[in-house]
Length: 179
Image (tube, rainbow, N blue to C red; front, side, top):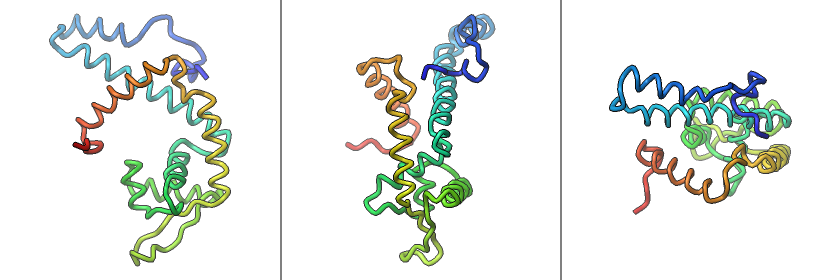
């Protein structure tokens, strides 16, 4: 599924817009204005938009958005198939209101049930259902078949990309690097 950002428009651009922006950036602010950082960051954002469009299209065939798919995968990875909604928000890095919306939509679709948290009288657990497990497996199979949108990279390049992005995630405080 090599659609990328051009997929939304239906036409690939006849030039690299980020390379052009880098040239114009250099002319306007000079090389010392972090042109390489701008080009790299803009490339990451553009690829992220393309991947999200691909992922939403793939999981959309299963009645999901990528955000709902991520929530189901998170629940699938737990030993008990349940998590407090507050913990889901932390792990998914989304606002509590967004978690509530995601879980409500999944509950309406029959993929999740909400239950009172017995360890926290005010909290709520999201619990994946068998239908939720089944749709997660089917959507995952389709994402795997699509190479997660990264089919243009070989296994070594994928490892390099992961290592570089992981370094940025550590620097940004996404998680604490174990010693």
